[in-house]
Length: 199
Image (cartoon, rainbow, N blue to C red; front, side, top):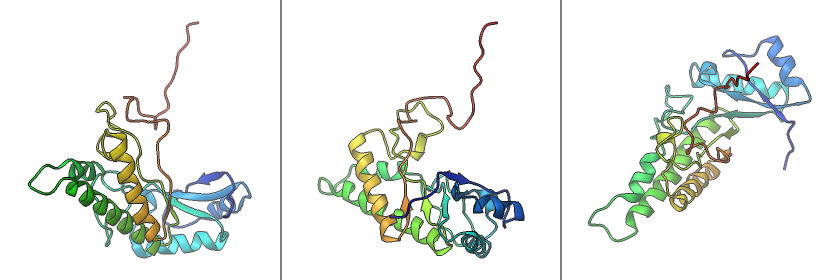
């Protein structure tokens, strides 16, 4: 297993500048994370990923790409994946089918979603996706909401495992998130809070 330097950095545009190249070449940088601002189309994304690898072959190219509202690339052939809650709802679906059939359908759908997500990113040269969301949806966090598979930890773990299997089949490395759990808090951890102290 390759060890990576500790820093993951980002860039502002669709291609590397000289400053970007210098920053990516720094020995403490292990890779970069892509955002929607780095996307124009598949050809441009593939060219950017190839350009990053010319700086250093070992740089890890990552993206926060889950499906639903957190899907950085949405056009030019990228599949619009549902939010993960849709898979949790499929698991809980009642009907005339045999007991457990909806759970099996949900796990198969999660594996398929993971494969599609991974295959489309790998085709453009992306190495790693920060997915799946492992938070439990307690109904309080607007940040998590339908990004979570559901509230039951057993269902969430089984669906996450299935999604990760699909990612693995596509050759996509991944990392579950968030810890210790964002689904129970209302505050948005992406925003810096300012604390005030009495003078």
